[in-house]
Image (cartoon, rainbow, N blue to C red; front, side, top):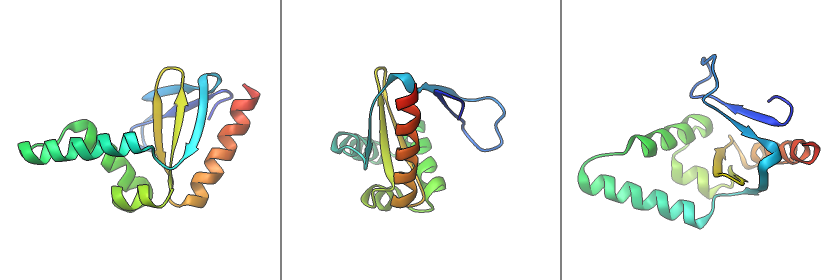
Amino acid sequence: MLRFQLRYYDCANDLVAKGVIDLSEVESINQGLSSAYLQQQQQQQQMSAAAGLSSSTTKKALNTINMMTGSSFGEANDSKSCFELKTSKRVYYFCAKSPQDAYKWIKQLEICCADS
């Protein structure tokens, strides 16, 4: 993390960031996932299953959660291992390996946001 920025990548080996979150634009950070997000994911999964397809966005999100937490999507969101970072432009979703790790991430991000 650079000062006032959080850079994110598709995978650990990438040299170029996929994107950057400007921490001066953060409006809130909340542990757990919102019910709106969970409903959206359920609807996408149901529609994909009914069509016999899976959207690449849903696949990427689930793969990222599985990779980061070592658990399935359902296990990750039930355990408060995930958190939302809301900016003025969009909402980002993150999952840590444990609720304690998520809490540590949130506290560090709050410190960085307060300094920005």
